[in-house]
Each structure stands twice: as C-alpha cells, then as structure tokens.
Amino acid sequence: MGGVTNFPSVLDDDTSLFDAVDNTTALIASHHNNLKEAVKAVEAKVGIIHTTVPTSLDFRLGSATAGHGHNAASGQGPKINPTAIMVPSGGYPDGLSLYEHMMARPRYIYRWDYQGSAPSGASLGAPFALPRTVQVESIMVTMRRAPSGATAAFDVNVGATSLWQASNGLRPVFPAGTIGPYGHASPNLVTIPSGALVVIDADKVGTNEPSSDISFTFVFKD
View 1: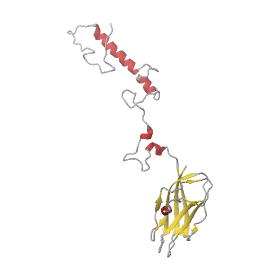
View 2: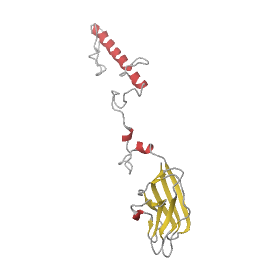
View 3: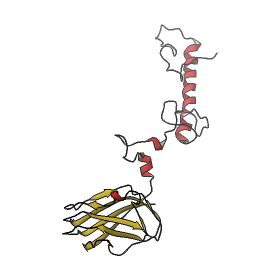
C-alpha cells in the first residue's frame, strides 16, 4: 500500500504524517507509509551523489552553470545580466553601468609642460607623437602665471587639424587673471593616429603678461 506526502509542493504537518498518541492511537499502514513517502521525497529533492537530476539540490549546487539560475527558491529564475548593474543614484555621468566601467578600455594620462612665457601665434615647444592610436577622453590645462591685459587662447592640433575644428570657441581659453584649470571632455576630433605629430599652439596671449608655465594633462583611451 502506497503512502502520501505533501512535500515538496508544501510542507507536511501532523495531519499528513499523523500525530500519534501512546496507548491511544491505533497503528495503521498510513503511519508508516506516509512517513516513508515523505523521506523518499526529501531524498529525491536532495539528490544522490553526482546525480544528473536537474531539479535536485546536489545537481544545482554541484553544477552551477548547467542551465539554471540561483536567484529564486526554485533555482529556475532568469540569469542576472551584468550589464544592467548600475551605480546607485543614477549611475555614472556617461550613462555606462558599473560592469561597463569595469570592463572599459584602460586610460592613459600624459602630461605636457611648457616653461616660460607663451609666444603669441606660435607653437609651444616641440611637438610630440604617440606610439599607438588613442582616443582623446579629456584635456585639462593650467598655468602658473595668468595672462593680463587680454585673453589667452591655446589649441591642440593633430597635424594641421585642431581638436576643436568644429567648435573653436571651446578650445582652452583663459580670460585675463585666470590660471585655470580649464577642462573640456568632448573635442570634435577624438582619434590621434599612431605617430601623428601633436602640436600645441598659442593662438592668443595677454598684452601685459602673455601667460607662462602652461601645463596640459591629456587622458587617452584605446
């Protein structure tokens, strides 16, 4: 005679497994058979060693990537998409997720300095070249001595092309008395090819003090 069990759909209770009282309850087959079926249901849920039954705990815990999730009691919930994990309070300003930032391309910081007074309408120092193609992410410019009498303006050219070719007014501009920092994260030209000459020009300088000791900090990414 077969017994019955509520598990694993619901938990068994004193009714399904019978709450017997000494010297009062008459022994019947269901007392044994229901308990037997409950034990069998628990064993099936746990699973034998190295079982291949996908609904068993042994299989799910021992085969973590075998087509099932672990975010619900049934073990069959949807997989978590790592690209959907966002930083609290709206995420990063660029809209990328935490996962995308963790997997993002590495950044390189390059600092270029010019010592002395800036010459008007001339290149500042020697050009430089990079040994690999990079993307311009941001540029920051500061100086030790501010221009006076007039505004100072600088430009970064890759060959003969300005990084701000379509928005010249966004290039590094310093009103009289201002030393910076100047920062602009979105130049028009963002790719600097490997080996291309990068030239920094002084487009305008102050009339009394032209400005001096200028520093450019570039952030590049692959």
